[in-house]
Amino acid sequence: MATKDKAGAKAGGKTGGKAGSAPKSAGAAKGGKTNRAGKAAQPRQAQDFTKREHAGAGLAVAAPRLKTHYEQTVRPLLAKQFGLGNPHEIPTLEKIVINCGVGEAVKQPKMLDVVVEELALITGQKPVRRKAKKSISNFGLREGQEIGASVTMRGAKMWEFMDRFVTVACPRIRDFRGLGTRSFDGRGNYTMGIKEQMIFPEINYDMVEQIHGMDITFVTTAAKDEQAFALLHQLGMPFKGDDKPVTPKVAQPAAAA
Image 1 (cartoon, helix red, strand yellow):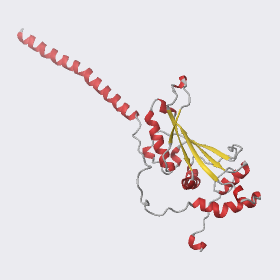
Image 2 (tube, rainbow, N blue to C red):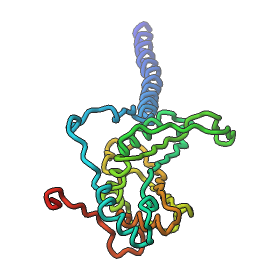
Image 3 (cartoon, one colour):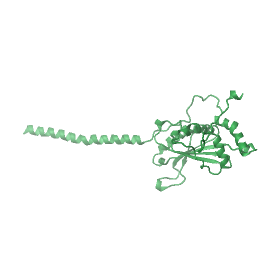
Image 4 (cartoon, helix red, strand yellow):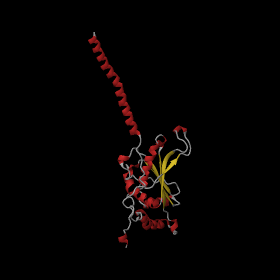
């Protein structure tokens, strides 16, 4: 009898230990999966790239290539085409505004930090965070909550972005057939939308977690859409219907001398 009781106690202990340990291990495994999934769902930590140093920090800043092309070639062509005798009437590029709305920032505020970082890489200056003007209960949005970012470029950064956008970014658009010509607002401004930020060469494919679009507005001093269209076309904007886009050609200093 004693031997049977000992054997039964050993068997019960073994079976009880296994049965008791199984739920713990399963729960631990499930808990580990949920923790990993939770960590993977969180966006990466954003960084500020506008304050880092570069190799040409102490060198003299060269004039933008596209601005030189505008002053040497585009201005005389526009003055001759529209018969503008006053040089102040010749249209020019005033500013470029990039606007990006992030609807996911309502539930994931860190997602906006990543978008701000990518816009800083693309434009070369720190974006401004935009807040909601009113509360919308259906979307869970409150007044004053940050839901987007925008950048306004002027001067040399504007010309450099325009040059990179025309020569590098536009050819990388998927199934690109040319930009539409019906996006003028009647006052000489042109607005276009981009579906993904991957067309810009500054964006690293490995660092992208979510694809988002943006709106780009080219603000000019032209009073009519015809003048704004001619200006952007001469600056190299590839519109639909062009057999070959206009490429800026700038004379070298040695050749000019």
